[in-house]
Length: 248
Image (tube, rainbow, N blue to C red; front, top):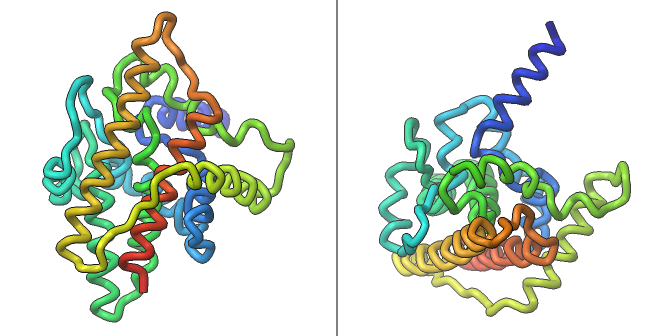
């Protein structure tokens, strides 16, 4: 019976879209952004997803149709969908903004605010994953899981988690140096607008990469390690800018 439950559970997980970068990869994004104290909070959103299911799942992806350009207006319009059940198309773009709003509101009220920031950090990591920005079609379903841990497969066998996270973070930081510096306003109103622009830009690049893989002849089913690191660097760069603008 236990074996049956494990098999059924694994099958259910493999059939969902809400899988994304593996835990060490998410933690490495946070570490690369210079937020070592928040590293383990980066996996909280996936822990919640295992229990909350549909309430949390849609916060991790957006099924952007081919040819659709994500705009800052689209990002901000999704904020109201945060934690919305039954949204099969997802709303990760708005979830980032909403989670950061929770962080600001909690902090202003003297409440513990690290949890919502950890959620936001996770969603910002998901943002750069190409398979979380394209239609959840046969190509996506068949190849999604194999790309989740693409940067974690080259390390030593039985590598300790802290060592793995540090190794991945160092590689991400190398790529961050190749990207333009991102700065966000410390004024809340301007911050939201500038953040939405940055989210849309990363989303469009991720979707373009995902659809290019699907359109290749033959189809390209795996990100290269370099591509994955460059995607992750975009997430880390944005997270670093967010922290600089609003973190207390």
